[in-house]
Image 1: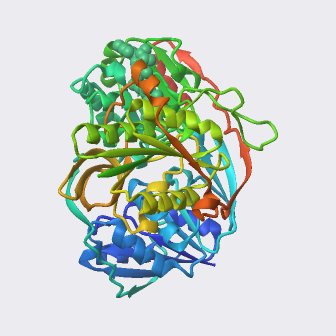
Image 2 (image 1 turned 180 degrees about the vertical axis):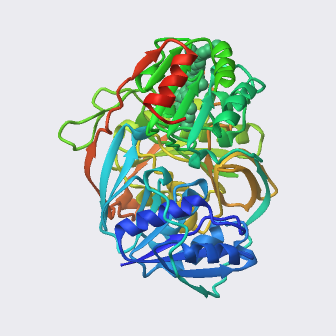
Image 3 (image 1 turned 120 degrees about the vertical axis):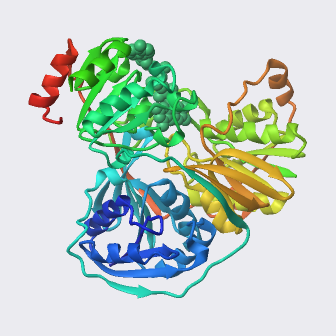
Length: 309
Length: 249
Ligand SMILES: Cc1cc2nc3c(=O)[nH]c(=O)nc-3n(C[C@H](O)[C@H](O)[C@H](O)COP(=O)(O)OP(=O)(O)OC[C@H]3O[C@@H](n4cnc5c(N)ncnc54)[C@H](O)[C@@H]3O)c2cc1C
């Protein structure tokens, strides 16, 4: 079997999500090739070649791939991967944007967000906001898959000795053009990779109050997340949303503050190792999944927590 | 300009679903059904474009059993002009859905396709991107802002690190994220009016689409249950439990 893994990167660094995806590829078993498409992305290619388990890295370095526009990239991936047994990418917004387009170009199904590998053609994926787990089997010649990072460990960044090979395939069109990007700047650990996450919900009342969570996060080295209600109300930016349609996290410790625990929110965090809930309503559904629940007014409890840590 | 909106019939977002004990699927008998929330946002966006005079016609399509005509009626009550029901089994897979939509686009001459980014039952998040590939159209997925003018769609997309804006030449496919708009409710007079609007029915066969899929569901199980833990009385107790019992801080 030959597995093509699509590297996620910003032309400068390889994103950790790719390392989790490589572990899923190793579980399938076979020869692992990583495709790095971008511009000036040599450091990314070198990093990918060093990852344990990677045998080859293909680099498509061209201005057409700078912003990972799916109209170009999907054509490239479909051409490079058409004889592979599997094509894998992380189930990030980038992977989700790309892989269905690749699958349709190849005329095969796409398998979204797998959480387990049961065999070379059989995978587990959550449906209904994680309230059910479907085991699916593919008879397609190429299996096009996105991988839920939290379900697979990171592959070791070292130990591999993959060869790096440039490929000269340019897919460029003008029906879609990149205009701009506004990326949230943060000194904190990335939400999906953090060991500790503290999230605020509608109970926070406004964006300024998130400063209380920051104090706790500073002490714990935690990332900060939010519920949809907090994002919709404009307290915090969209990239902080945890849930069915936001980010999936599974840290060692998840602290939910002023979050009721709707199924769509639980979908994004219920695989956390330890869950703490702080909520003034003792009936809040979040307590049904919390290992430690504190029924309290968050405006007293959170500053006290920050002080005493 | 003509807009095609697809609407999926799904279980209501707030229903707690149950997995069948024989592992064959999810028990939806008697469950409340609704328009997929992301499709609702797509309908709303289409109607706003019509109200602004950017679009002339909004066509709502649903693929599934006869019951999905209910969801088409909802779209009509919200302001879509006419409906198309593609009569098929309830669980047509994303690639087949995209192939059906491709045929309808060719037939109707569509300039903009608005779809939900995912349906809350199968959580696939695939159809829009697949449709882009099949038709060669550009795609603007996970849209939180859309402006259509001069043959272009300016789409701001919610991405993992923040937001990204792309410019697409029409015809194009746009999939909606939660924050694109807040869908309206249908008024009673509009619900009455919707009853008179037409819904045409076609089959995938008539469109020349094979709806079979290379993917089969082997079994469906309930996820491991998480049991409720304990209530702590104070922050001191919480910190001590996290340190000595859970050992996570
Ligand atoms: C299609 C769809 C997708 C969705 N996707 C997501 C998603 O990805 N992520 C997500 O989070 N949601 C999602 N939702 C929304 C979800 O259904 C809930 O509406 C949302 O999670 C509620 O957020 P919340 O818990 O912050 O707000 P609420 O449900 O309003 O809860 C606020 C909580 O704060 C508590 N509180 C208030 N004041 C205080 C105080 N002073 N001290 C302590 N506690 C206090 C209250 O007791 C309450 O429990 C989705 C919904 C739909 C329909």
